[in-house]
Length: 237
Image (cartoon, rainbow, N blue to C red; front, side, top):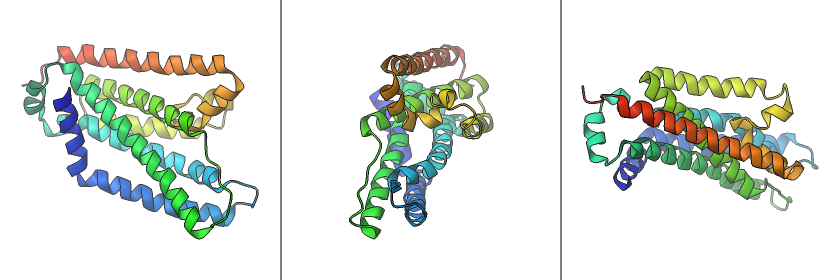
């Protein structure tokens, strides 16, 4: 497991496109935060509005990075070099899901820190509030785990990078498009969970626990399904 994690972490560190994603996050956050600060009224919270503008971009970035991380060995056909180093095939996808989730959370924290710095620099003295940060991070972790597990299932089932990236971006865009139809339902969407979990807990602890439990169960079922298919595949042809 440690060997696989090390491999995936080094892949991200030394791959320029992931560094560019972080740079894009910083630049995009700075631009959106300044734009928000100029256009909101005094009573409105700049950070909350800035993240609402950033949230869709965040999920598009995460959809791409997760799909890319999961499909890299299919694309480059490097399973012959990777799988023999792992004592258990379970470790392969578990590591991918963990690293993808951590990178997604890192992008989210990068946005939060950048927006704080930008507002503190250009609008000092304004009282700023943010989401309940523990629920903010918990919502991000749960939704990223679920989304990563789902895309793991897709790449294992089809074995094609284009299908995985298309599914990832398609699902994110579909959720964004239908978020406004029924707020009670869309609050449980992965794209909304990072901001809606706090409200779910405040309104009904039972509903929040059922929602969190559903996320965990679905993630486990998708991971188990992925591993069952993965164990049956001959990856060394």
